[in-house]
Picture (cartoon, rainbow, N blue to C red):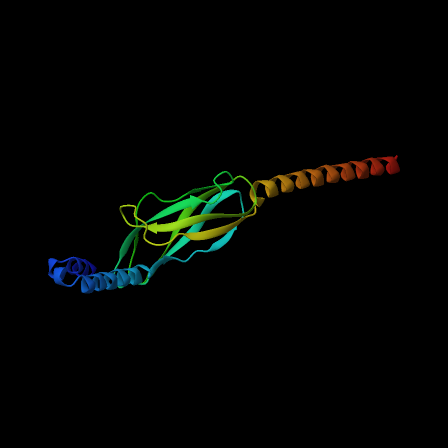
Length: 174
């Protein structure tokens, strides 16, 4: 229906009334914008417990027909956060929500963000970008290191205590 409206809005039948032609064209563009606004990114933020991993970006389609879109991702600070999304187009069925995994690689912990934008199959912007804020905890490797050191210290302390008890037991039996 949008194609028909667009073709009729640029039809030569409007040559005698350019004002009506402009009005019809603007109504068609407004209708198209209204339909496009029903396909959007829902994700606004979340937490990444490690300095790298996958983060879900949710796309919602509230139209009565399926849409095929691309997901364009741009890091707000590419030196601190690298973002990589799917290269293939994403098909979202009518009245469905699709979660797309995005690969994140953070250099530092803290609050970082990236922009996610839906695009047409040909790479044209579908809507305005959405800023997604991610709290990068970076606990993965650090927590593993702290846990490993603590476990090693506990084993050493237990071995020392056992050694002292064995020596004390041998000394009292002699």
